[in-house]
Amino acid sequence: MIDRQLKILTCAIIGAMALMYLAHNLANIGEAQAFFTYVTSHQGQEAYPVTLLPVPPEPLIIVAMVLVFGLEFAAGVLLMYGAWIMWSSRGKGSEEFRLAKRWAKIGLGCAIANWWGLFQVIAVAGYQLWQMPNGTGPDHGSWVYGAMSMMTLIYLSMTEE
Image (cartoon, rainbow, N blue to C red; front, side):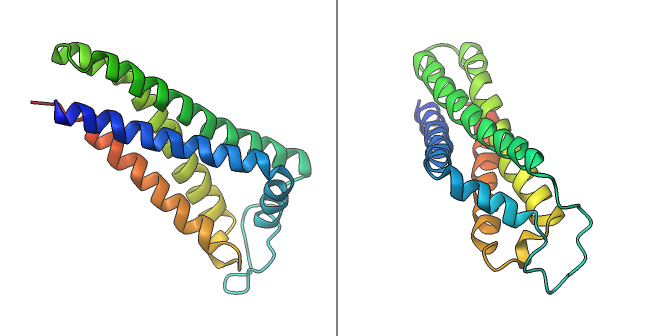
């Protein structure tokens, strides 16, 4: 039973984290847009001055923001819902609990797609966020959040005794 409770807890933690980041992004929407514009601007890239991805038009930056915020929302809601479903199934048989993990797994997939897919692949590698003066925090943070999500997904996927 302890494994089931820990799986529920870790999913709720990652879900709450995703929703907190979404709330902060929405509360600071102007600053978020300015940062998305900065990241894609090619400014502050002295170490590797050539960036292969183009500077996008403003509407595409808005689409990227909607995608990031949408994945944060989906991750948070699906993980919280999944944690609730697992909590409701914690005393049931192994097959019922295995099926109850579905929504949390999908939520973790959204978190990984966001923090490793969008942040690490597009922002860090594609737009070279790693070399920008204000890029080390998002670079490090997105790697850690993606790793937390992946570790939780691995743990959640393990069969309980």
